[in-house]
Image (tube, rainbow, N blue to C red; front, side, top):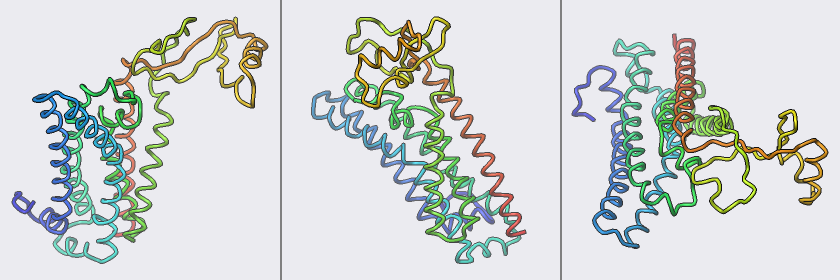
Length: 304
């Protein structure tokens, strides 16, 4: 990092965190390189041994990509912001005619400059390596790991994690507490938006075939709701009539009592993957802007 043409506060920030930044960069290169190497080896020698190695590499990479926003939030909230405020190291930068806003903006920009390209490269390597193994993996494109690792949302979530980490670091001023709260807050956002994800794009309504085969829905179809329609078109989900120890006959009778006559299915086909990804990415980026704005407002009030 010291070889970069940096001056002023950028130089100070890089010197303070060069080991951590180099470590993050090295981990990204090693992860991307390892995943790509497994794919190249399989291309050169496509046998069961290399296929198993590729499957394992893809599975592990998907897990790390899904967890990446949490790790970024903890890293930014702790070493990058809270620890400096706790120890008073921020005064070194502020004593060099650097405004607090410039200090914070530099930290966020340098972190994003390392984390975002690394995330994008890792996602690209995952997409390339996922193709030959997806048929045997039990996960679809809508499951948590592939969904995070195949699209644009993880890159957006890493930006959000940087903003959340900065905000909580500024509010708490305690390294360990800030790290814990940043991880908790980022995880909560991931879970909350995950619950909203089915509704980010209009679902397709279909009919349930009378004769169902094991692959009647096809691959990568995300079923959200199954039920029956009344004569007026009102939906009655099966969940309303199942459970509480009811037998299949009792559930069917419950549907009949509600006037249900025709089966229906609400689902996302594979063609909805990118629309859902892009809408979610836009939502996360808007939230990132709001959190970053809040961080600068907090900095201005506390250290004006």
